[in-house]
Image (cartoon, helix red, strand yellow):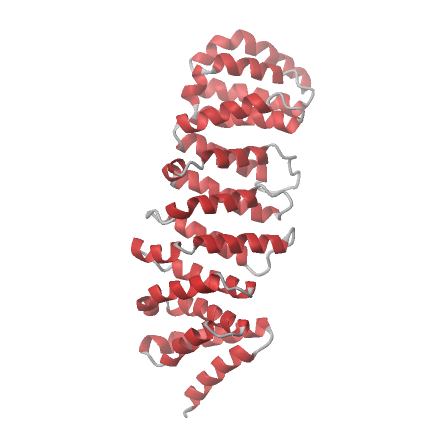
Length: 364
């Protein structure tokens, strides 16, 4: 046996036997670097056979190593392995539901995410999209284990990147599983105990889903559930940390996308219902959220809001007498939005609106 063959054998033997996960990952990196040179010229045919056998081994460590190595190979020599993609999706799908090891499921998830980034045709993507329910279950399992701790494994990032890749694809690969994805991400986005960065990724998904796939959301009848979650986030106590974008702002951006990209007949009744319920709520943040919803909706829902001004104006006027300054300030901003987007009907209410605006000068 030549030195090169001995080295290849040593690598794949050592990566299985190594007990330290960090060292194991480093060995996998070395093996993938070598595979980049050898696999395109078919000089390491036993590697894929080794990974296939390891992925079905009774030892969970072996199955995890196989998924880890598949991820590295797809990253380095993905195009060379294209004839095997259909088989890979089945292999990864089985590992996503590994009955004994979350580590195996997570490694399979990362391998599937790397594979999806290389898929182009609807047929190829359909191979991978069938495993979305298992991916979302891994998301929920990981979040349950993490609690409010940071995700040091990169699992959640891998999941959100996978979903972003599917969302950006023009083919309707998410359609069949969109209810499952939305249900899981609603839980994540609305969970106040979770790390803020995790919630933000979930909120961002809804922003881009409304931007890129509004018809799909409407067809799946998911708008009410998404709207309800965004409004609940809007009602939370505001995070005063010095950050670029708060969860409140992300929820507001999601609401704006719904109002500007979903037909008014599907979204405005939800706006009106939320405002009527929240604007007299005992919690100040709920009242402020109601006014914020009006502010945000004024652009995208200007047609039905112009017709509903006789109902909206009295609701808004009450907010100028609210005991909380933040609610009164929001009401002032709301009038400005109405003046921009609800012309000319808003002009008919100037006698009602100008006095409380002038009185607000005393709050400065």
